[in-house]
Amino acid sequence: MFSGSDPDETPAEKLSPEALAERTAGLVGFHYTVDDYYEVGREEVRKHAMAVQDAHPTHWSEAAAAEYGYDSLVAHPTFVSAFGITAQRYLFEHVVTGYDLWQIMQTDQRLIYHSPMKVGDQLICDVSLDSFRHISKPENLDMLVSKNVIWNQHDEPVMTTYTSLVARTGVEVDPELVESLEHVMPKCDAFGDPGKTVNRPPAEPGQPDPTQSPSAGKAIDFDSLTVGQEFDPKSFLLTRGNLTNYAGVVGDPNPIHYSDQVVQAAGLDGVVAHGMQTMGLGATYVSQFIGDPAAFCEYNVRFTSPVYVPADDYASVDFTAKVKSLNPETRKGTIALVGKQGDRKIFGRANIVVQFS
Image (cartoon, rainbow, N blue to C red):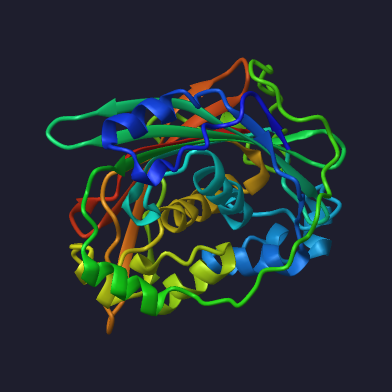
């Protein structure tokens, strides 16, 4: 389901970097609404919570969720990664074509929360290319921002996301890498066709963004906080088993998260954790402090360095945080989050806005 002009049907993979950039720039503002909704399942919420190492009771127990005021299990603040990749993949396979997915790197992620994502929600994505910029020196880089506005079956806004990506163009693909990808990527003889299950009007360019924010729920008391207040530090361990489990939960088959053969051919230093996986661990850490994961209003991260995970050992991801600012009028606060692997920062910027009680 689309709105706006159809993309040029010229095979973008044959275009020069300059022509590809011109074509992609012309797609800014192009909107589509996914044809099939995603239904949030009870076990999917639990599996994702396990993948980001979150034991908060609202993700696991209906009785506990009811005590917090929710009528079903509440999804983790980064659960969007479990279905957002489907809409993102369609964007790059059918609209913004011509890019090798293995050459696209996520640089920033912004999640704006409107209402809790819960079991039973039938989620619908309005997707668009929000902005584009091309750089030609010292190498050809295309910088894109995709936008998802997510609604439930009651036409209530749930979340707005902005994903910033950088794509290298005009790079000759190493035949060794092509061969490696051919032998490690998942194989499937055929995919089923779910048909069209979404019948709402398509997204329109210029449509106003939702402005609703979540309630405080059972988040801690605003008056108990002070600017500069620090959280107790916490470390999470990641193994290759964690990476492959997360890849299965969110449906991301990118082999840089599990294949030494591919990362070597691609010139990477080693197998890396998903950016959204490390972002998820950060949300788990902050949730433990604030008390109610559904009180997140915004989560904004700039990724600066990946987490490398060796084949025969674990990686330690270490988090600290402090209260950056407090607004007594809204009773909201901003938490500054720091994530590291050893002495290396994995986030250049990470802020979480919370609605406190």
